[in-house]
Length: 218
Image 1 (spheres, helix red, strand yellow):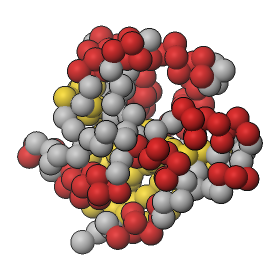
Image 2 (cartoon, one colour; image 1 turned 180 degrees about the vertical axis):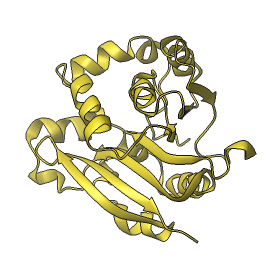
Image 3 (cartoon, one colour; image 1 turned 45 degrees about the horizontal axis):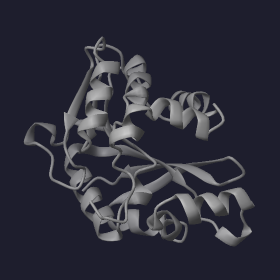
C-alpha cells in the first residue's frame, strides 16, 4: 500500500482504536455506524458480507447480527494488530471469519462469486488511484452478479467551502490522499469498473457520504 496512506493501523493506534475513534467522533461513531448498517444498508438474513478492512471487528458484529446463522461475514485486513483485535472481539460469533489479506491482491478462489455485499469504511480514500482500480477489479471477482458495494467515506466537496475544523483535519491530520479524494470522480470511476450508483446518503453537513453501488451483470 502507498506510503502516502494512513489506512493501515498498527501499534498504539490499533491497541486503542475503539477509544481513539470514540474520542475523535465525540462519542458519536458507535451510534452513527449502527445507523448506517441497520438503516441504510440493504442487508438481510442469510446474506454473505465482505468487509474490506475489518478493523477492530465492530462493524462485522453488526452485520453478523443481521445475517444470523444462515449468513456469513468475512472481514479482510492487512494489519496483524487489527486482525488480532478483531478476532478477540468476534470470537463468540460462529458466522464471522477474520482473514489476513490485502484488498489490493486477488482473493482466494473459494470466495469467487461468494458475497452478496461488500462494505468498506474510511479506507477507499487512502488508496492511490491505481490501487483503487486494483481493489475494484479484485472485488468484482468475489461479488455475485448484482452484488451491492457500500462505501462510507468523505464526500466529494470543495474543501474551501467546508467548516474550518474539517479543513484543518483534512489538510493537517489526514493523509495527502484524503485531500485528493475530495475531487476524485467516484461515480464515474466506479462505473468504469462495472459498479452503478443506486443510492447515496449524506451525513454531518454533507461532509460524509454513504454510497450504494450495484455490480452490473455481465
